[in-house]
Image 1 (tube, rainbow, N blue to C red):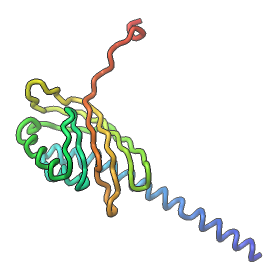
Image 2 (image 1 turned 120 degrees about the vertical axis):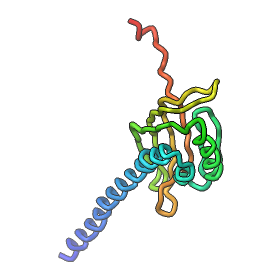
Image 3 (image 1 turned 90 degrees about the vertical axis):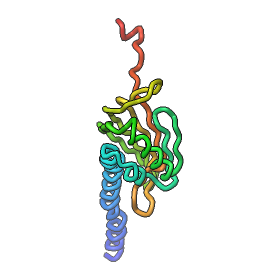
Image 4 (image 1 turned 45 degrees about the vertical axis):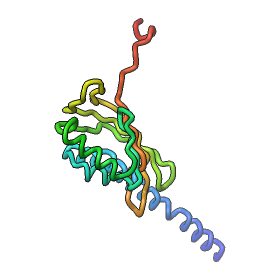
Length: 165
């Protein structure tokens, strides 16, 4: 009898954390989707460089669609302040899809599909209309932040001979 109770106690204690882990996983995934999609979109559309930069870790990196590399939250904010004053002053960013894949419980990769209207690009630079972001996010002190960010413009693939048949 004691052996059965002990076995049940061990089984119960092993199984009990699973729902809690699933709930924590779902909460983290939701927090990442909010960070990458909703919060990023809101800060961008308000043209608030400070709020946008605050989504990043202090040592976060940005590589934008034209391969300009900004290192650290202060540099991200400084560059976006200038960009929001001119080329992105009328821009609107919309996220269509955010996918999340956990690498560890505290690190995840997010891919975010976006569209943009209202950018006023100088001659020679591509107008951002649609693209894909790849973000590495990290949970630091209980808060998800963007550690690394890479943005790309979408270019449709060329038609192949098979497509023409």
